[in-house]
Length: 370
Image (tube, rainbow, N blue to C red; front, side, top):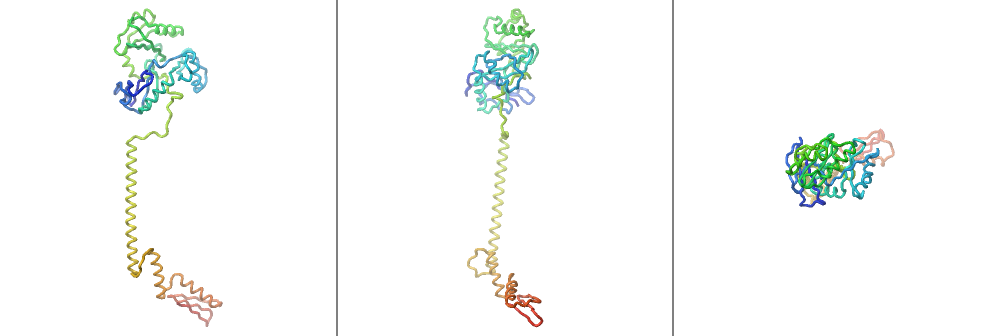
């Protein structure tokens, strides 16, 4: 799903500020729309912000052929003279060059845009793009559009460059429209016709009168509420660039269900490990008890059992010695003593049942036994 949120033109948003929004499905069909505070807006991983035309100014500039990064650095200073604003407060983004080599540039107040994006972020909304609402009326050739509301007028040319103006109830052609048409005529881009769309139930002005005064055919269009559900032009200027470009974070946050499942698996794994450790400890305790019982059965006189294995080996060795059974090292001990008794070399050595017999000559026999 995609969330489209229309940013209001207020100076600074607060918890009570209401935002218009639309929620689309994967096929770009409208699911829901409304106007509410940020806490009540539905959430979506794919969100786009629509900037009000009253906050976005446009200029046409002839830009040098340099890198995009250099252009971004130069733009605030290039529009400084036209806007009479501090370049440090300006965020400017260039569009695609058309016509006579001029490039449309969208300009917005940096602090205002930052405040809006921060407000959205605090509510868990992170737009991937932010474009002017005039983008919904751009994309044609010699195709100009005018949104006519009770409180505002928004003129949009085929490049998406817009101008907003107030109007009175006299019904005459607004001065802003006349100036925009005269400027386009000076560039040789006067539109042959201009469609007028109504907003908020407003009535169309006297289009025939306007056509006569401007020398441009004004024709009735549709409603802005319908147009606002459409797709922006491919040539739309996205202001989420430069300092406002969305930073790619590390690994994306896992869904809550995946985190819960991982926690359950970890708890079960720990439980199984603990159960297995307890089972092994129980078996060890049982084996140690059986070992001690066997030791006490073999040596009932033992008073203290500290290490049954060691005590068993010592007692077994003692039993062998007392009963004339050689231990593992008895042969070597006897052989060493016999070698010390006579320097005469031995011709044969016999050892059986704890008895050592050494023959040193035909008549000499040395016997060592325990």
